[in-house]
Length: 226
Ligand SMILES: N[C@@H](CCC(=O)N[C@@H](CS)C(=O)NCC(=O)O)C(=O)O
Image 1 (cartoon, rainbow, N blue to C red):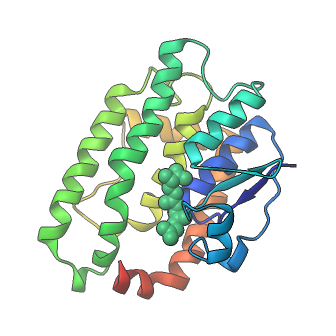
Image 2: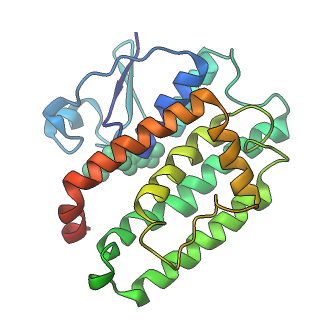
Image 3: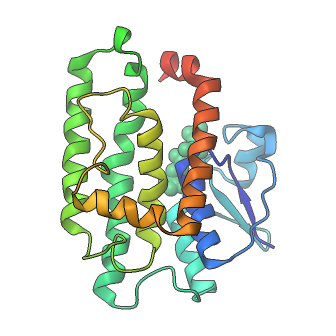
């Protein structure tokens, strides 16, 4: 069995877990060597030093997007990408927008979680980037209700955990960053589709719970060192 390294509190690890779950692929979950992706022991098997990492036949495959594409190649059924080339590209685009335009705003917001210690001038450009990314996601998503069509695919498994992370950690405390999945817009329709799909809802709920536990344990440390 392939072995997936990484703490499920990571949205990148969670992406692979959700994608594999939708496709019915069992993955072993060994502890990260040295208990930390920064450890020497983990760097010996993955010099990038980040999780997830997928061990396949003694070879390490890093990077969540690459791992999902590999799983899709090896286990094409049930499909984790739509059939039509432009739809496949759109699902990948939703994943890319998540990685390139949403993810970079998350860490820099952490020092500002506490309104009493917040630097609003530092938050404003991050909020603006997120707003632009949300507009782009809604613009480029297909007719839906999932990010491309009527079934969840790679784009949903990528954006879903990240949106769950923002819903648990960011939207509740930043008035200037409203939750785009609330209301009537395309992202609200998309979120409803995920919530109406048993496996997706289960994966996202489980991820949200892990995030809450992680944040409760690390809030002060994240606040100080980010
Ligand atoms: N581009 C990578 C990002 C993975 C990543 O940033 N993982 C974080 C956890 S959320 C990590 O391992 N951080 C450890 C570190 O930077 O020391 C992917 O898609 O897999």
